[in-house]
Length: 378
Image 1 (spheres, one colour):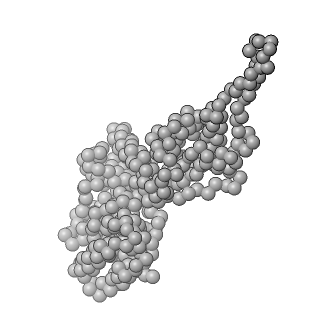
Image 2 (cartoon, rainbow, N blue to C red):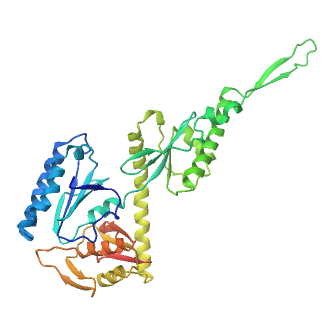
Image 3 (spheres, helix red, strand yellow):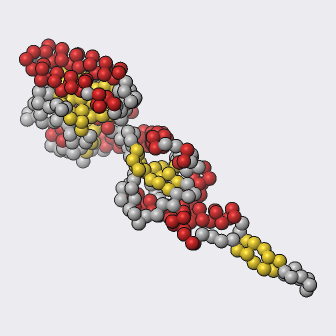
């Protein structure tokens, strides 16, 4: 195989490899096999190879064509389509990221890889635990915007009410009393019917579940916990829960009525507001940092801070590009020719990522500045 599917973003990016690079972004239809995905990719590949020949050297076209044509003909690759792909290829290697959301179909051919569309996708990856809870059992999953996976708890952890309560289930209390008539043989009476017994046992089981999930998972990793259970169970569990990561929004459906994929889809709907909230908080922090002079929106200052490792978070306007190249030794910025359309915002983003900073692509209406870029300092 002349191409490789990678998962770790941005660690697996070919930052320091020699160009030119072809960067291909494509939305793919999530089907067992959709011929349209292949046709679209073939057209994008054709466009890419034509640009390589036009802008660089006809003799190197074959080195780009080989891995790209292998992807075209690889049935297994297309059988497991997600919502998009990002493909980066130079004369030595070809890597592919599967994306968790659609992207604009686009081909870039220039000296370096183009990563802005990928950043916009991967910044939206938010994971959560999903607690599938009934009165009889619980399961817990980890879910993000791509997949769901059942978490295998240690064997010592009990997950059913029968295992948890055993012989300690609540019994109805039966008492004996007299009517006051000396000829009476007395009356037997009960306290706590079947419903009360079940409610008490359910609460015991839910308390155990809440404590177990916190100690085994939430205490070790502070991500949202989404409760999937019918409305009545939601009310009871939320009253007794001490888990600070329990999401306000839940999935008010029985886990027995959903497949794992359906459960994940409902979890994504719960996570959407959380994603928007995080970006809004970041933008507000950027605006405050600019006011406090702990940030900059000037390209030359941002570039200098990036190369010296001072940038903690970089915000880039989704709609703006700055066509220029930069000499990272002198920090001299030169406007691009019409042939090599390098986006300096993209180049700065790579430097920030290499220096373990974070990069976010923000809608124009949300940006705290009009220059298209904002660097929050460490």
